[in-house]
Image (cartoon, rainbow, N blue to C red; front, side, top):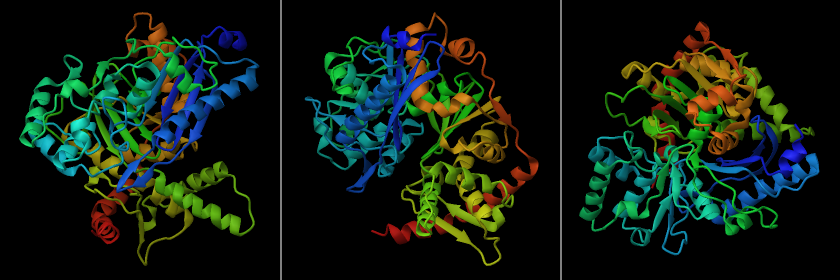
Length: 531
């Protein structure tokens, strides 16, 4: 294929995803291969007791990621990027973007990481008889009602981060069903917000002195393959301030990172699951039927096509590992060594395989933020060892990798042991799996099931949302599952690692200490977050 002509003819598909620590943009060709990419690192801020990103961070990051991609296209192919066949926008799920009637931000973006919505979550879960997690948009809205916050009476549009960017690019107040399912419960039968629960929610608000017309400020829900609008002149200028990018490009429904992770790992069919592991970690299991009971540890969301999914979402995964890696980097620099962080991470992850199966009685909690699955509204990273522990680097790293999966295992036990959920395959993707075999083999031990990774898994959610945009452009009357199987992944089988009995036994021993040691974590958070 003449890539230069392909790009000049405006046939490329653009996918952009706003992750927790990086905004990534990819351009794919008609064989679904990434032909160019760009990105921008960013970090959340902790201001006024809330995790947030500013609008300058958001829009500046969008432009920086696209600019780097555009420059890479120019340098690699000698062509100016001016037109595209389709665009998709994705972002970390949940939290709240609240706008007034003039589209001004009413309160700083409240991210998925915030855990200040405990009272709202408790009341809504009881009233709906349906688990409403702390990070869901409705929890943030109702907590605002309970707290009498000023933004509630002025609320004109509530959406997610992906929904905000899409709105700015197209002028359309829409959201993909997968992302919308993290705002408010979905009625799977009709693919829309649950009317019965809407009525209950509005009555709760009235009882607290606030009249809210739910549908007046919520986005319209779309499923994969539906047209979600086109890039406006204003949107084109926002994405590409140079003015080179043309308007009129179609966009697919904006989605959350959970949905794009399912797409990127071909995990949208029933009885399939995927684990996305990076700053946070979550497992998605596409269900054959409803669960027997409500579990506060499990979110009920959907695939981008609207099928029911049980989601185990944990706020913490690799952040504490990253912090320790930086300590090792500082030590190396102190000793006069220059450090390649990719080599450092590879070495640290790899040495973990040499550790004792139970980590030599070492224990850690990488709770940089609260962890609702294990009952924590605040987090405090801690490392614990006994006088008889085998304290060496291999056990130290293995302990931190095990810890990164600890809360996830708690949720997985509920799915398997209490609900009898069976998964035919479990796909892994995200930075946790970047070092060959390490994260994959230890995840197989933690979940006691084979874990498959694919060469494409490293592309992540930006590639996943690009595939959804490609599905919009060239779906050929196939279902999303058929499209992925027959076109995108037709020649991709991936690499599967089975769990090893001694690793499973070792992880189970670690989990016994992990669960018992939660009292230590509770004491640490009390010490650091005492009001």
